[in-house]
Image 1 (cartoon, rainbow, N blue to C red):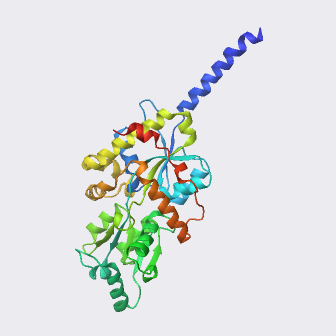
Image 2 (cartoon, helix red, strand yellow):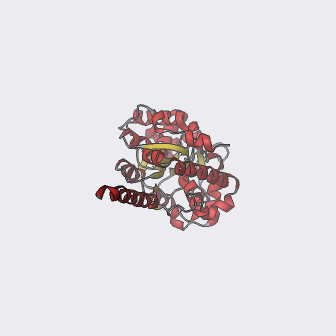
Image 3 (tube, rainbow, N blue to C red):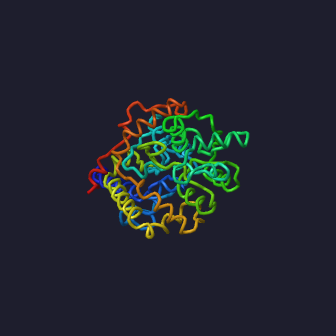
Length: 337
């Protein structure tokens, strides 16, 4: 008699657990910066998840290292994060895969104040301007950058060493977070910075003397930026959901490139704490148009180069031997036209 009722009971229990699992919210980690713009557009347009899916749990981080630790601890299902933290997480055996790229060649060097005055607006010679500044001011110019190991810091170092071919010690690099860099530029506590949008557009609008010294591929050709990262467990348990995320990612990229005015309010809600004026956010999107790149295949070689460079600097202690293992390009290949 007992055996007659055992199977239906277990079946009902199994169905109950399956339903609970299906109802669990997707946990998504992100930084409130322009390189995560596809997430903000997908959220704002209601396109991020399939219809009927439980609203995601958004987890905001203020730094890449903090997000990296969350990935290593298995605390996120999805992350919009820099390729540097993705490499570190994978090297430390986090079960993660890059399924799409967000943005490439995202870093700009902007000079202000006295240093900017020594630069020709049409063809700025940074090395000459630094030499003149140092001679006349009696000290090296200060250049703000993100913490060591961050992609913008790597791009700055690569530019100084490999593109300008100067001793990086000709400038004093100040390592700060996004908010601190903005404040330092506003207060003229530094003379230049290696920064991301929308800080670039913000500084250019608010400080008429500011000049872009170098941008994108001028600093680090083919430099990978932020990526869409997912758990391997999610790929195995729900590949259709991962495919939807990538499809939405491509649609968001198309909006950012082709309809910046439409994308602006979605991005404005998250970037800069939602306090930036729409015109600055739209200018940042438009200035980044050619950098929004969703194809993960196009950043694999650049990721290898970036990792090797950071290892040579000593800013990346853990190296991923097989960089290809970080990428799963199947979803993009299925989604791409």
